[in-house]
Image 1 (cartoon, rainbow, N blue to C red):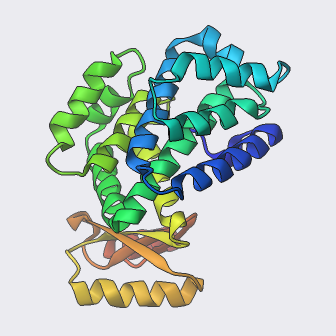
Image 2: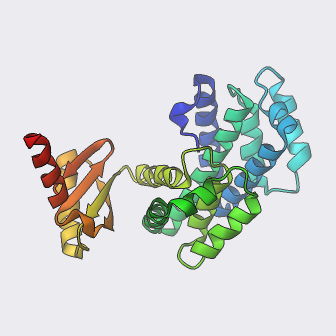
Image 3: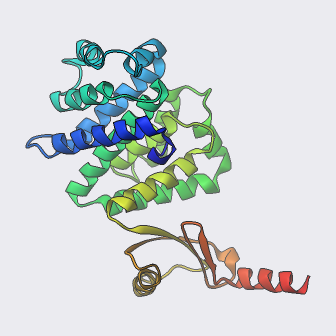
Length: 276
């Protein structure tokens, strides 16, 4: 899963323009963001398989109108009108490479699905479900490896995701997880899901604090910690908590690249370093 920050300059401009079109389409009455996002993901899968088509649609040196006509001729009647408008605008932009067009369409699909969760009032739930699934995969390296295996059939990996998480997560979360699994590119599915968690948090102009606690936190403790971290960082903080008894006591908090280690294990390790 590629971040917009890793795209080349032309592709970043193309993605920004396509996002404006997506926002306009999503603002129209009757448009279903979840359906649109799923359709965009289907096109990403198509272009992943069809290298020649991907090259034709992502060739920045060709006539933009010809690229728009090509995508219309192929997909008219196979995707919804709103999805086709987004796709026509996207392929009409100048991307740095066909691969980055693919990354851009994936980003648009994620945005549409997160917008769906936002409009339904359950973006928090999607964020939490993604976090929980990521933690499961981090704790089960063999499972993460199976889902990250680029040689494994996509259909089999998608079926495994549904069997494992179908009853534990909503439709938007499952669609996002399946997309990460489908286009996994080497750093593990858990890593890709963590990036989606941050993306969901950014939509609410928050930061994510990953908290590891030696014991479960009460609701009051979570609220107090959220308020304290919000005061420290000067912005709203989303708290995602996992329990690890091996800490011995206390908490480890990670916000971005900064780690606050208040655990017993962390204090012991610091003492050992001082005595070494």
